[in-house]
Length: 173
Image (cartoon, rainbow, N blue to C red; front, side, top):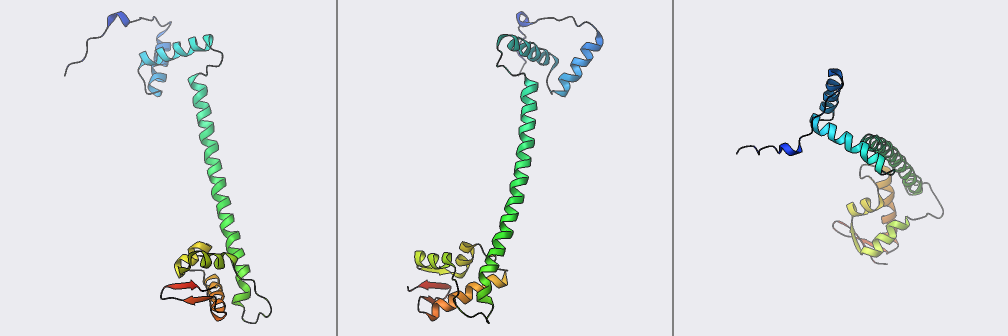
């Protein structure tokens, strides 16, 4: 496959003031990963657009804005990641706090049951142990919270509200 014949009518020759200017432009073109011809064309067009349209933003300004936005996006992602970690820690603390009265066998008096657990059982009818832990956001390796949920389920069973199944629990209500 042969190259297309260049259209000599489109050629425009420029006489650069010094060889240093030409070398500088070639370095900048190489840095921009473009040919010298394309580099010169883009800069001339950019200059003309700035004169014609006051809302026109030069390529360099657009790139600066892009870099600034990318940096801000990275900072926001990091901030979000940190906040998610804090939320996870607080939720874990909350689960631990709520489950204390079920873990502590010496507790006497009224115990507050996990509303989410009861609503989950009512809504689905039958739920596996894994689904219960996942829906409540409890890590299966968190022994205290798992023990507290198990104690709540045992208490609900003793009141005749739930029944154990081969893989979990079903609501009798």
